[in-house]
Amino acid sequence: MPEGPAVTDIWIVFAIILAIVVLFAWDRLPVIAVCIGAALALWATGILTLQQALAGFGDPAVIFIAALFVVSAGLEVAGVTAWAGQLLIRQAGESRTRLIVLMMAFVGVLAAMISVNGAVAALIPVVVVMSIRLGRAPSQMLMPLVFGAHAGSQLLLTGSPVNVLVVEASENAGGPGFGYFEFALVGIPIVLGCIAIVVLFGERLLPSRTSKTLPPDLSQHATTLVEQFRLSSDAHQLRVRAGSPLIGQSRADIAAKGPAGLSFAPTKDAQGRPVRKETLSEGDLLIFRGTAEAAADLAGDLGLSFRDDAPEAGIADQLFNRDSGLAEVLIPPRSPLIGQRFFPGMVTESGDLIVLALQRGGADLPPGETLAAGDTMLLQGTWSALDKRLDQAEVLVVNSPDLVRRQAVPMGPGAKTVLFALALMVLLLATGAVPPAVAGLTAAGIILLSGVLSTEQVYRSIGWTTVILVAALTPLSTAMQVTGAASLLADGLVDAVGDAGPYALLAGLFVLAAIMGQVISNTATSLIIIPIAVVAANQMGISIQPVLMCVGIACAGAFLTPVATPTNLMVMEPGAYKFTDYWKLGLPMLIWFFIIAVFIVPMIWPFAPAAV
Image (cartoon, rainbow, N blue to C red; front, side):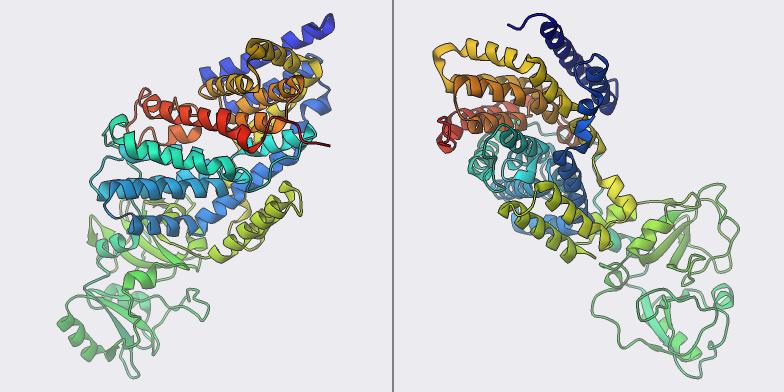
């Protein structure tokens, strides 16, 4: 037992750890405030210098974790996850077993590549839709989705921030670290076991409830809007012929005084950008909504012809595709647009959006009528234009274009670029050609510079709470080592297991990490437990590899409470879960994790230290 000032320093570190745990469990203060407060407390009490207390913000592991958030967002924005989700729906069929196997395997692989949070957030709407279509309660599927992601996080290095910290701890302690695919040695049996548990026991252990507030299904968003604004079955595209009396007439006059049901099709240049035209000219397209007979009569009277080069795909696919989309907006009270005249086919003042339809109370707005509060407008434009122009107070967007694109546009713009960036990152990580932080930043840089994500979207995509948590609590591990707190706890743990051997040490570390991980984040738990594990392994004279892998697996087993991870909370409302629902399925999962961590891990990474 240390003496003198060292004892005081150790108890200060313990007090800070206790305060962190209590404040996390209390959940009344922001997580980042608690974490930064802990770092500053280590400096204020003299445990660490200011440079040591803030060193985590420059740690390469923190930079790598931030880069992974950007790659995850790129996959989602580019429609890669939407494509995968739609593929999952097609392959699942109506079999519960088939659905669970495919769903958990898929989310596991996705979580391994882009992190648990990104995978679960992308697939929650897909799983809800699948459940409803198959006549099953979403509560039967959403918890297996999350637990499958937790299991899948052990497949690859990129699956979890904890994996990154485990590798860094091994290398800092003189160990060989873990390869990018090396985690799969335990990850594969973990995933297979979790799938088997859900298939065999999930139906009995999970409740059968349907939430009143389910995430919206936007997979058929284009068809819904086209039908609502009556642009589908009764819409006919007509081309202005030479000699038509409409040539040279003002579009505004035709919109106000022309035949009912006649509007303008979007006019675009060779690059697909909207063109502002004040008058009609030969070759322009018009849209007439009415019967085929009325369209034929109108064409004869006004010198028009039916378009003979219309794409085979319906008008919904013409207006809503990888390059452009639709947005329904509402005119709010006090909007500057109230009192202005809009008509279908006109280009907005910004020059990059087209008005397709206007409605009031579900009926088409009469020609020449000015806008009023409560009117709805259907706009069409490129996805970037919709994102940029609709983020203003003059209109209220019914469904965010960004959310719609992520769900409904599979393999959209930039998908090939994002997949290339992901493949390059995996290659660099697997070969060890560059440090992980460089590989992650390279992939994130490709996604940013190619325009898949804007600078603002990059900032929004990063989970700053996780990044700051890791950065601010990393010095806590340093403090535990320099004060001897880690050694003291390791001594106690080694003494407790006595002559029971290294298996008992793994069991003790697993239980300690698993219990803490149900109350505070698994990342914070790993930062507290890892230094204890390293010292304990050194005291027992065994390799740190199995010990650190055991800690990583234990931290991933955050199953028993909804507050254990953000993803557990994500599904609580759409799954209509109660606090006590989690442990029923979570406990068998945690037992399986325990078996893998304590008995299988030493078979792969032996206790005997590697020969130097």
